[in-house]
Length: 138
Image (cartoon, rainbow, N blue to C red):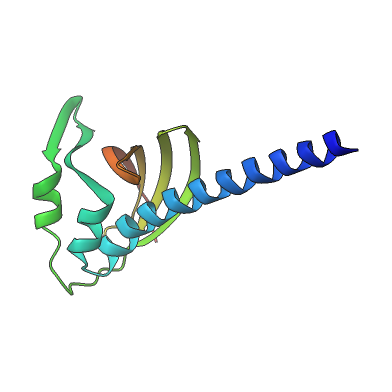
């Protein structure tokens, strides 16, 4: 009986830890999504690692942006009509990947962001962002 109770306690603790990690990752992702949508560059800085780069393929050529320049282009208080959502998250220990969908009606585009995160000094940071998009008709 004691072994069963200990086993149940271990399973409960593992599930609680896993939920906490997913919540922490989602908090970082929401800082990125909501920070860009609501003109809050400080929230985006909180989400991104200082050495983050962004990647996109345009006309069969890899285009790279420095993350700091991306964040500096976010105007404080400048709201946009971006609508973002977390599609999926997977993690193991201190590494995670996430897929984000951003709908931008003004451009008639749906962006898909593929993000790599690492847990550094107890905080989840986006260290890599690559994206693609599709254009749609109204």
